[in-house]
Image 1 (cartoon, helix red, strand yellow):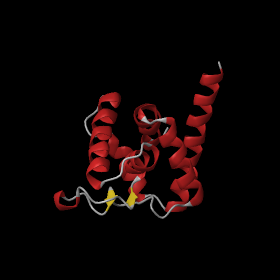
Image 2 (cartoon, rainbow, N blue to C red):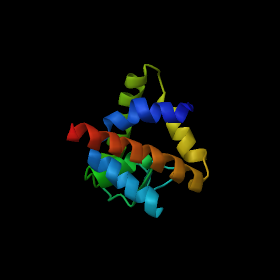
Image 3 (spheres, one colour):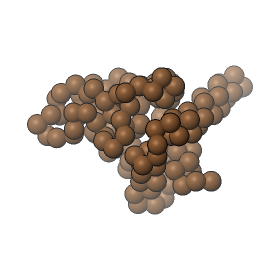
Image 4 (cartoon, rainbow, N blue to C red):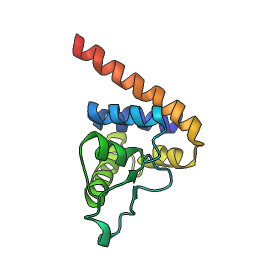
Length: 133
């Protein structure tokens, strides 16, 4: 299994709310331009911009923004940092989140949309199956 996928399945997906997964699913499906590659947030996470509303975010930031209702650059940046810490803890490796984040930033958009959308569908289906049991 690719490193990014292992980190997604074992480190990221268990931490995400169902609302976050659904928001990410919709964004990947529609190719939402607010789903950014190469940046955590737009505007950038600078101290002077912490209170500004977010208008774009990477996959992790998008989950906090659109899925969990965060609004400001500061809130999304804090969520992103906390998620990275928790992912690394879950994986038992410092900076393990980089495998997913590097894949996200470096993979051609069509490919990453297709591959991550399949993972999000898998996660949502598993949660539905568990809830029905």
